[in-house]
Image (cartoon, rainbow, N blue to C red; front, top):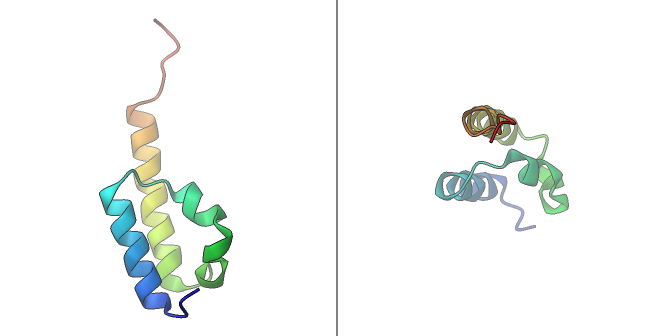
Length: 65
């Protein structure tokens, strides 16, 4: 929205570092569609996906109580 891809990606990276890396939120956000093809955005989403998968695996529900 601000027209500054570099600033937007920097802020997204900062948000991800301050909270859980929920890449699904960023990939589905309609306000981020304008930068979704940017190589830096794609690299960030790849990093966040890896982190997300690690957290999911670490905290996965085993099914037993």
